Figure 1 (cartoon, rainbow, N blue to C red):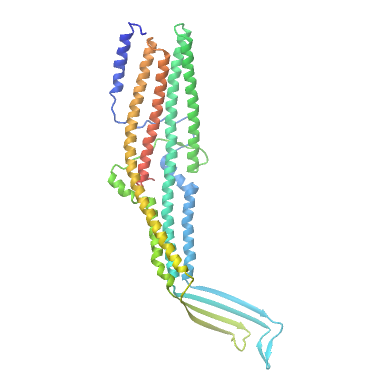
Figure 2: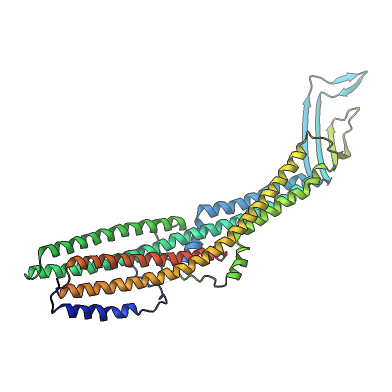
Length: 436
C-alpha cells in the first residue's frame, strides 16, 4: 500500500507528467539520421549500390550476354538469305592414263578447281526467319530491362535491411544504457543501506539481457551488410545510410506508368514476336528461287571437260509435301501467340494490382509509423514516471523493469515500422516502374 503522504504527489506527477506525451502531433517526423558507427565497413548510397550491382551482379551480366547471343543468332539466321561462295579443289592420280583408240580420255594426273556462287533470289522463308530473329533481340533487351528492375529492387531491400537493423541496434543500445543507469541506481541504494539486494539483482538481470540483445542485433547487422556486399558485387560488407525515396502521389498517373513497366514491356514484345511468327506462316508454302554460278578450271583438259569454263543455273524449289511438318509448326506458333497474350493480360492485371496494393500499403504504413512513434513516446514517458515513482518509494523496481521492457519493445517497433514505410515506398516505386 502506498504511503498517504506520497499518494497525492504521485497522482500529480502521473497526471501532469503524462500530458505532453498525450498531446503530441500526429504528423510523422522525419526519419532520424544515425551517427556513423566506429569501425563500420564503407558506406554506399542507394543509387551507387544499385549502379554497382547492375554492373557487377552475375544476373544482369547473364541478361546482357543473352542480348549478344540473340545478335549472334541473327548473323546465323540471315546467312540463308544472303549469297554464298564456296570453292573446291581436286587432285586425282590414276595408275595410268585412260586411252581409247589412241586418244587419252582421262589423264593419269588431273587437277580440278571449282567455285560455286549461290544467290538467293526469291526466298520468303529465310527472309522471314531473318526478321523474326531480330524480334528475338528486342525480346532479349526487354527481358534484360526487367532483370535490371528485379535486381535493383532486391538490392534496395537488402539496403533497407541494413538501415532498419541499425535502427534496431540504436533502440537496443538506448534500452541497455537506460537499464544500466537503473542498475547503478539500485546498486547505490543497496550499498547505501536504503535499498535491497533483490532490486539490485533484478536490475542487473535486465541489464545482462539487454547486453545479449545488443550482441544478437549486431550479429544480424553483420549478416545484412555481407548480403548487401554480395548483391552489389563488392569484395566485402557494405554499410548503408538513410535513403531519400520519393514515391508518386497521383494514383491515376501511377496506373498509367505501370502499363509501361519493364515486365509489361517484356510481355508485350514477346507477344509481338509470336504474332509476327504467326503472320509469316505463309512463307512455309512459298517456292524458293536461287541462282547458281559455277566457274571451273581443269588441267589437263579432256574430251568432255575444257581447261576452263563456267555454268549458270536458276533453281526453283517448290515444297509440295513435307509430311505435315508445316502444319505442326503453324499450330505451335499459334499456341505460343495465345500463351503470350495470356501472359501479357496477367502481367497487366498484376501491375495494376501492385499499384493499388502499394498505395494502400504506403498509406497504412505511414499511419502505423505515426501511431508506433506515439506509442514509443508514451512508453518513454511511462518509464520516466516509473523511475520518478520508484525514487519516491511508491513503486518497486518490478514496475520499473516492466516499463523498461515496454519502452525497449516500443523503440524496436518504431524501427520495424520505419522499415515498413521504406519498403512501402520501394514497392510503390517498383510497381510504377520508376525504380531504378
